[in-house]
Length: 384
Image (cartoon, rainbow, N blue to C red; front, side):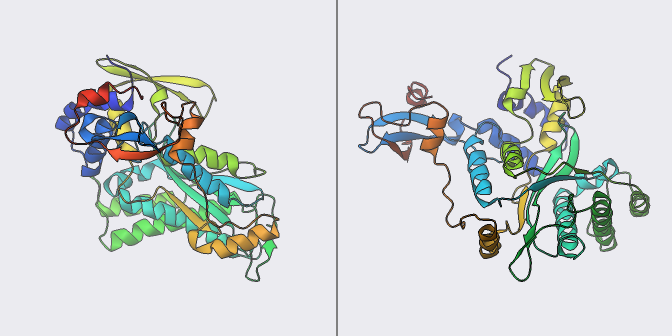
């Protein structure tokens, strides 16, 4: 078969899978966008220099958040914007994980459960940070949702990057009273309580779709049972700064759960995937049927118009004045307009030339391809 990429896999298997499985509309549209990415179906654009010399033609990208083929520039831009905000303090990396028993509710209520997970984590951190015994101030927080484990199974959890300190009501920078900032056990209990309370409230208001073969009372019983069990809240050792975690999160803010480089072989019936095991820290391999891999791939498609990350506290866009107060207290310059990477600079980073082959001037014009321009012209282009 052809080269193993997410796009070639979808082209080979999606039509048959769609005929045999009931899929939500957003997953169908996402798969269609990924299959059309950088193909004739989306049209193209030509690239010119300052003097109007043509330097090549490209097919257009789909720009879907879950597309691994066209996300590199957007990921780097997000990382740059995020790192420009980071405070010069230690940062904590915490992970809040949803128990497996609640996955079925998520599958039938994806938008609601995604928002509830964000809200539960955010309110937990805000509530505890306000308490004088912990901080009594507002920290900077970044929350990012991942719905996958490293082997691509369904595993919704939120990564939290939080500054070791915050700005209090008088405008002073305060340091937490504990090295760990917040106790994991207390965070787990409050997070657990908020999420389960949200599920129960929605059930009482008849706002949830009850999963197949389930009843409302059984779900209430499940919530009561899970309320007595420990949930997983992982707390890594504090980092001297937040840049490393921001770089990690940027890889998945755009581009989906799996990258093309992880796909090793696409056969007629199976696909081979590699990943780094969280348990062993070794590279491991999976051989899945097309149906098994398709189910995992589609389950992680980004919900349309639903954010996969949130900036909270001092890192929120409306708290720029307070953020700059905190930066001043930490000896940093104020954040004003954030300049992000443009496509010309990105091309240079990849080792390509972003200047005209005829005159050497900068490539700075993108024009839509004229309708009468044939696909043969595009395919014969000397650029990419």
